[in-house]
Length: 408
Image (cartoon, rainbow, N blue to C red; front, top):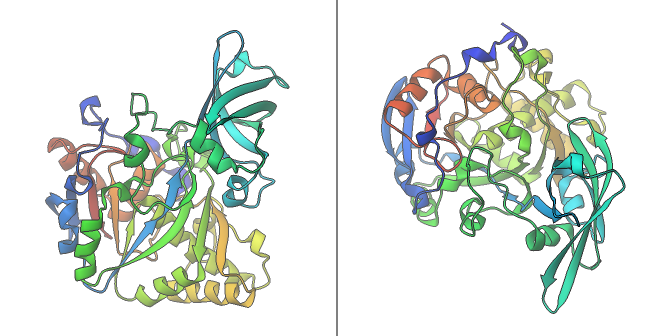
């Protein structure tokens, strides 16, 4: 069956409200860990993850950093307008460029209370900044499909948009965490290795890692590699169509260095564990980009992207190592130290995983593309894994527990 024909109703389960984690545990690595290997289930905690991974293997992390993407403006009438910054306008080549903009920036946003905000009307927000006052203005430019194009400008041109969000924004907790963001979320809704700003949602599998756990992994000669995928709000979007064929997969930005690709090649014949669905999507996207270069050696770097159905319509019988080596040689020939691209890769049952041998991930929402990815990775018995977690009252979703799945 082609994934386009998959019925989303086959990928649902009953998730009781009391199993959705509203807050993280006090200690990150104390979260429970379900281990699925050789169709057997075991339980432990994240602190002991090193005991389940082979020596001299590689863990791949997503080092994106969540930005305070929610901006609250108040109209003179007293009505509140919430602007949720999703991603930069297509005129920017990548998120880093847009985040570094000074003076003004154009962003695609969701707008709460949009009916109360007429195009051309300028909203204003004043924020104390040292001895001065930062004045942030928002101008409604146009409606673009399911979002709005908003120009944001500020009175201190020496301050980047990333700094503006730090000063004026609110941490965007997932919609299923039904509470307001608190001060503690500024730390706990980030991984300890978060580096590159651009996500509106955390790569939650990484929230469980601590310096102490990293030391245990080092002792076992388990190395770490970091890639960047900026997580968009589409990660929370449930599949609303009856089949996957009508579901538009969200696009996300990826940033991977040449050195990271070399490290993946060096470990591809041993053991690679992806920490999180975003890390997995990133390194699987590298495989398909390598295939594209093999088929189109003269492809322009800007055209090197992964579309939603590429993995099911392109020739994909190239060995993983060969695809990565081809991509590496292409980048080196262009003098590019890193790959900046976009991926729309949809991983669902019927997809053959190419690179990671294991996946660390949280428990995901019913009828979500993340659950489909887990089903592709773990195989038909994904439901058995989730039934066990539900019966044992594991904590679900972003601040919840997680699992270590070995490829079926």
